[in-house]
Amino acid sequence: MVNVTKVSGEKAPFVPAKLLASLKRAGANESLAKDILEEVQSGLYEGIATKAIYKEAFARLRKHSRPLAAKYKLKKALMELGPTGYPFERFVGEILRDQGFKVEVGVIVQGHCVQHELDVVAEKASEHYIVECKFHSDQARHCDVKVPLYIHSRFRDVEKQWRKHEAHSTKFHKGWIFTNTRFTNDATKYGSCSGLMLVGWDYPKKEGLKDLIDRSGLHPVTCLTTLTKQEKQIILSANHVLCRDICDSPQLLNMARVHTSRQKNVIKEALALCNYSIKYHEK
Image 1 (tube, rainbow, N blue to C red):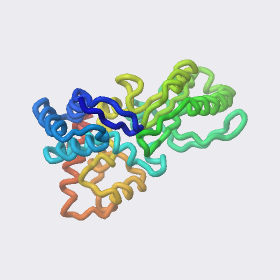
Image 2 (image 1 turned 45 degrees about the vertical axis):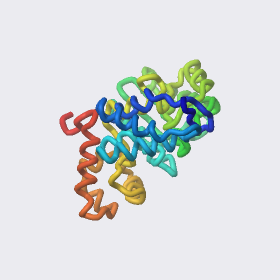
Image 3 (image 1 turned 90 degrees about the vertical axis):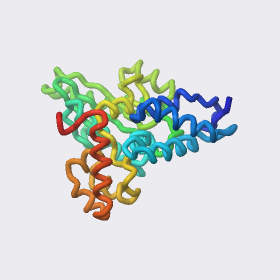
């Protein structure tokens, strides 16, 4: 049994089933997933970093299929939505918009005591949500209990002000926190106790961020393996955060100064990603 070193520095036994599951979730069939697992296992050594295992699996998957590799790198792609948190806020807004919410990103509202700059405000029927997005570029950084404590106090201040308006008297108000990493146990306990909704990488079970993305097919543009980091940043700077944006507006590649000889492959990969979970153009 080989022990691996997690991002946190903690040592734990290598679990083949976890790697196999992540490869399948990316769309690899049973045969391909098992082949890659065997190849990765042959290079394991005591204390190997999980990052090294990921890089090896990603490289082997990319040789077989770039769209599969793009989907496999989802966690890393979310962290590439930085260095600021603004693209992540827009990405969360798109996830909620896909669920039927009317969404505003970057909203300044008056609370009962002070003004607040809210990352996202989402409405659907009688539901009204204040959404805060906590972006981390370091996988080891988790949202501790201070985050929901702080957000809950802001939510109560805004809700008190909203309640003064007649149009809000019948609305259901709720606070919501999204993060691209994870919450600590105390954070999830406080969220559950206080009524705050929390969404992390894999929380709640089967309703985490990775699950929402898998079901919606809304992959961030940073997933694409055919674009350089600089090209992705140009597209993000223009407030386009989805692979779907390239599917719908291929001219974005001209704006990002992607050479015409490469554009066909970028569009091909984007279209394949957009159609993995939901065929967007058939909706």
